[in-house]
Amino acid sequence: SDTWISAAKDVLKESGSIYICASQHNLANVLTSLERFEFKVNNIIVWQKSNPMPNMTRRVFTHSIEFVVWAVAGKGWTFNSEALKKVNPDVQKDGSPRAMRDVWIFPVVQGQERLRGEEGRALHPTQKPLELVRRTIIASTNPGDVVYDPFMGSGTTAVAAKGLKRKFIGTELNQKYLDGARSRLRNSDKSAR
Image 1 (cartoon, rainbow, N blue to C red):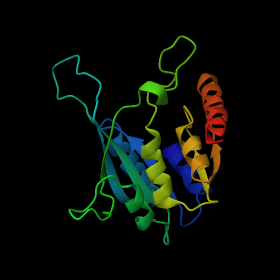
Image 2 (cartoon, rainbow, N blue to C red):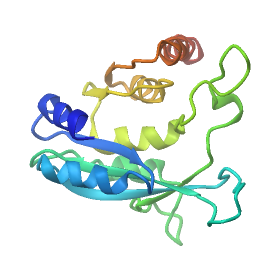
Image 3 (tube, rainbow, N blue to C red):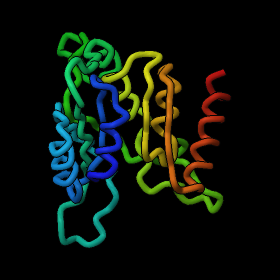
Image 4 (cartoon, rainbow, N blue to C red):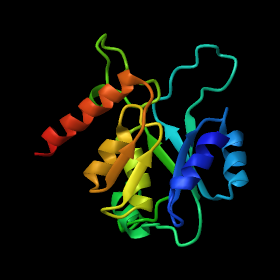
């Protein structure tokens, strides 16, 4: 992770944020790399999967969480607390908005949101929920800001950024994923009309 985190630091504006999805298997490496390149970790968000993949081995607890590390490169980062309150499904006892917490509950992507390849199987193995990515963009950017995803996969970040009136730049090495992401972006244009 050192190579791409270093490259991300080079293109990130001084007050910019970086969000990295991690599992228990690579979280320590991500945190070590962020520290090495002088990022400040503001939060480690826990994505609790309401429908985790089944535990086939029955030799460990079922893996039902992923982590989303939010780190910043410098001072003066954006954090849109009030905007997050508007999209927070949790409310106070009196029904008023509540500040966003660092545990987010979403199902693993399936159904209509799941991008599928020609054979009908999931196009990308780790497609993230659109609403999860929307929250990160709402939290740390404003309309017109640029969002960059160096591993754009199925295009979730691109669709979220576009829907939130942010500019988007993405890179992807896998042509199959890139084609799927492009198609998904075109379809998001049609559904917005």
